[in-house]
Length: 264
Image 1 (cartoon, rainbow, N blue to C red):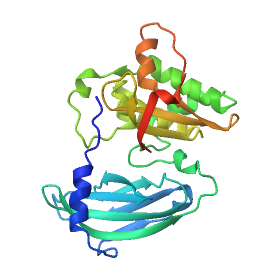
Image 2 (tube, helix red, strand yellow):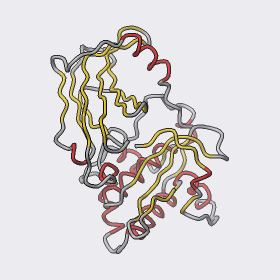
Image 3 (cartoon, one colour):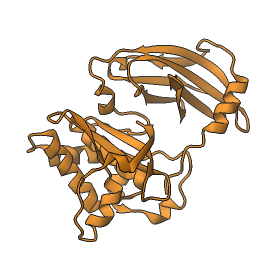
Image 4 (cartoon, rainbow, N blue to C red):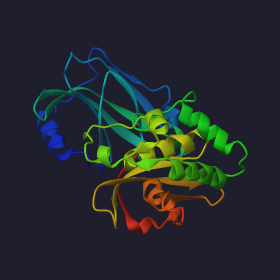
């Protein structure tokens, strides 16, 4: 089962310790991919000091663990984003070691959902991405690309129940690791599908939240179909159970059955 990110207490402790600051020594924000909705953050904290990134816009906050360097999405639309680098003080207390306001204006709002980032971390030389190219080389439309990747994953990746019961709250999917083992939890399914679909040029979101007939926290996807000019909901994990039992199920889901809490 995917564990829900425990950020509320962290947010409270961060607010208690917040003092305005510019970016401190050793912190670098990379805006070279800002026109695609991505920023990079580089910061080498003292050894064994936990570091986090907070990105906020219009009172919506996203927290990420930071290990020296990574890429993060600005997925909440055009406007001003507040970016903070936080260092652990003690327990759940964090201090601000740097902050900056970043302004985003995308020519295409879907561009951010084509990029690699910390959660959907992929590159062209991965086996999973090579497989996506192989699966989609003869396709003509976004729908065909999505269906080809979807069919491959639901038929070949099995749910890992042992992993689901032993997952760490800070877990991040490994795209090629999931592809090579052909096992994973819902987070893994959604990340693998997002990486493969994005590499094929299909804007894809990884969503987290609730499904009406699943007890725990869940992860799934939405894809943008250009010809239909709309986002549609796809749940690879849910469908794989049916498909691998020889049961039919529709690929596109009713979005009203899902409650979105996080989107990447």
